Length: 439
Image (cartoon, rainbow, N blue to C red; front, top):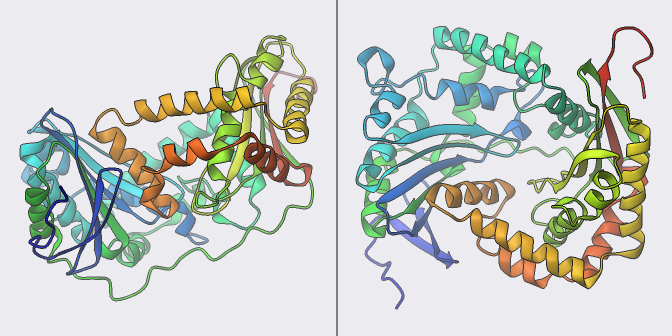
């Protein structure tokens, strides 16, 4: 029997999909998602802000990630000096707390006993508009972030991934690393970050998800009490309007760093998450690079060209990348590995997959989806990515969309996506002392 939503003071009920119920907090238009699930009295509260590195401008790359650090440095109410920092207060009640930043979003979350849900909501509401962002904290975190940046620069595979994205996107900010460019991390000021925070961190640019063993009525009362007094933003939220120009031919980059074994990443311009072909691309990635029965595993690993291979489709708010990644074996030619990848990619683009491959890929993806729904945090995390992509309903509707995918759909999207003109290839070349280190 449907729940009575008329008596939820301050809220408008919007819709229910897959057991997830959407509400709007009328005072400030904040989106709220609630899912009562599980028998263990544990809940996850996650605040997803619709701002990520996609929204950063020249000179402010890395601002979202920098603010992720600063949001833990304190407010007037919760701060380290008084022994009431976010971590101290939440960890006293056994909470797991953290945050992540990505291209299209930032999230802050707590997984904790359901009885302490109000504490988590109070803290998130307090730092939504009350972060101190003190110059001294900016300087302290600048050092931390620069160390994090340097660690990434010293990891060949991460460096290869960043270089491919940067080469693939000439205009769109997806080409910028989420952590930012070093000069921007070094140069950003507390005033710059305050301006970015004041622009994007508002209730009507956020979604609060409450997942787990919760009473919906009590949860909504807590959300209204905690967030209801925060005013709506007086301005709009600047969006990325840059469209990546059509790529006119293949591109390639090389990363030369110390190491023993090389790698190749081949990427193609893809579609955005809300494109009807997005799910078919997930199936294509599974057919090409998921498990020992995948095409690329048989072609590359079993034939002794690579030690491992994977394929993926980055489903983002704007068109992202479909990619294949392979680790070489010692002494193998990286160009030979690239040619083998391209041969398999070309084959599936020309002939399409078999019905058996479609069925196997759907089975694998269903199993992965089931594992990704094990626990309140996993559900909140998947919802978070769907929110970032433009529609939270992408998450509960995925299995339904997956079942609709046919061999013809995958053949069509492969032909559309795996084209030479939209390809960017990256080589990780282990640097050796002396000699030619190129490929």
